[in-house]
Length: 302
Image (tube, rainbow, N blue to C red; front, side, top):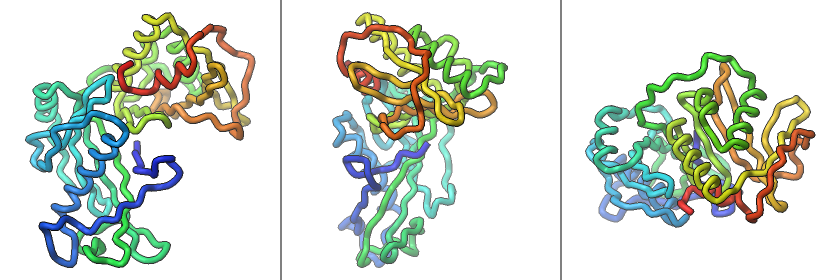
């Protein structure tokens, strides 16, 4: 799942004017500088959103995380690696060693792979190729950056052998929300499952991280005697999603699946022009607190 660095309103990719670091010289910006650049970007993007990030360093030998982010529901140790020219030619860390490092630091390990595009001529963007188009003093020293998150957790859990349809899987999610229980749901999450929300700058790149997060949120809802109100909705192709609605606050929850397993879930901002319409399967629940779902999907601790 890709995390695009965007402007504050999310309307377009954020453009970075980068001419390297003052302690370096030469016509072309170096590999070392771009490695540092992407670590600085990701660290600062979490920081400006109020996330507690710390222990930043520029280690490339997998001896330490490049920084740790306290997301509220968990602490995540990030290894940030540059994908030069989008070729995926870099050495991935040893998972066993990284999990030992994560245990030592009390965090969850993630790999963040940075893809950079550079503005070469007016209206023309190309993948960064270090030593070729990363000019230190170019007329347009502009870059856009995206990160691909990969979990470094060791996941040996099994999944259900049932080959459920996409709509069946949506209803399994609905059952989990209605009962505030993930017992059945966990068997239908793909090992490479990703979750993201339009309200949160982050991606959960594994079913382990997602289930830990969702179990914690369900526990909070139970303690506060809160149960969600939502409806199943259907588009013209007969595909189901969930529409959360509390006191006029709405959000769509939809999934993607493959071979009977859920590969992605997305909590999306409600769009009045969506091709989903309400059906009659509304689950009758009562919620008194306003904007409960914003708190639910803000992954900082309440």
